Every structure is written in C-alpha cells, then in structure tokens.
Image (tube, rainbow, N blue to C red; front, side, top):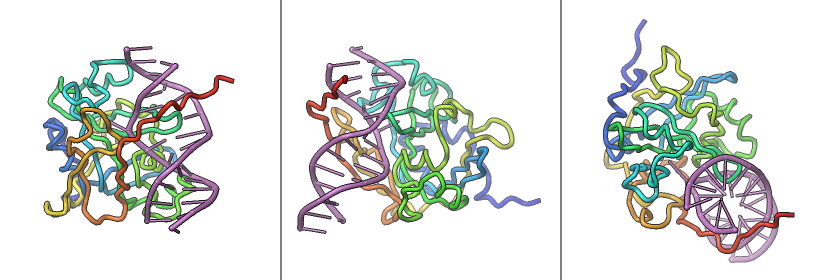
Length: 217
DNA sequence: CCTATGATGATCT
DNA sequence: GATCATCATAGGT
C-alpha cells in the first residue's frame, strides 16, 4: 500500500514553531475531519496568526483563562471557541510551548464531502461559500466545543488532522491586517491568504458596536 | 456588487 | 454591562 507524499500527515514539529512561520505554511494544506456524519477534506486558503500574550488581538493577551487554556498547552492541538452567541471558530495551537499562540483557520475549498458540507450549510449559494469564513468553515466541518483541545496526532484516525497537500507558489501567498481585529493589534499583517482564490473570505475592518444595548425584556 | 443591521450567549471586568 | 477573531438577510446600486 502506497501513500503519496501529499497525503502524509504533518508532524507535530511542524506546529512547534513560531506562529508567524506556521500560519502561511498552512496554506494549501489539507485539513481532514472525521465525524459521525462522514469525512470532509478541505484545502486551506486563508488563515490568521494570533501570537499569544504579546499580541493585543489574541485571546491569550490577558493571560490564561478557562476558555483559552489550551492555547497555553503543547502545539498540535485544536482551540475551538464559541462567539457571537451562535458560531464556532477553529484554531490550531502552535509553539513553542508557553507562547500561547494559534492559527485561526478562516477559509478553504471543500475537496471531499461537498454533499455533506452542503447539508450542514443550507444557506450557501455556491460551493465556494461552503467554508468562506471561519464560522462557515467550522459549521461545514461540524466543529464545536466538543473538539476543543483535541490532539491532531491522537492515534491513527484523529477527529481532525492536517496532511501535507500542495502548498501554493510563494508569490501567491499574500498577507494583510487581520479581519475584525481592532485596538493595538489592528495593523499587524498577520492574515495570510492565497491570492485570487475564490474561497477566500472578504476582508472586513474592525467595526466597533456603538451603544448597542439590548433590552433585558 | 455593496452596505446596514439584528441575532444570540459565553466570557471577562 | 460591554464586548465579541461572525453570519444571513434585506434592500440599494
């Protein structure tokens, strides 16, 4: 039985590097999700780096809390959080240990399991939209907080893993400010994407909510 | 294509 | 109580 090099899993050492190296290096890689519904494979086209306690845009900026604790653990694990009352976002924890950094997986192209992804993403108007955005990606892959902290290298068929895939030519890798990040971290060019790829999500600048108080009924 | 806005609840201060 | 690493929808261009 032969396995082509692009189907080989990445090693844990791949993730045990500075997040600013790992993030662009993840573009073009293949994310594999095994769940009860079936298998999804996705080619990553857009990611963002969050550099831990030194990064004002990072959940880890103000230190360890119950939510962000897996960011402080070893690399090669998932960090899944719930946001805006409705959505989940999926990150991969990077090294070195103690840095509390992670890569937000923002978008990709579904290569395997398009039918299953469409069942989970009824509102998608085309296949290009199935994982165009971090919460859409998490929805298409059936990722929620149950997956938080899971090890990408947990046994022969982990719930989530990353294969080598085919990285794009370096001159197609672009970088710019992170979507929806404000404050002192707003201008770091730590969003990375494949230029011209139709599955990359639109950039949105940080939009502060202004006096948006809700009635308490 | 674009912009504006409501939905919804965990988290942290 | 404010914020939030977002999305779907409605309506204008």
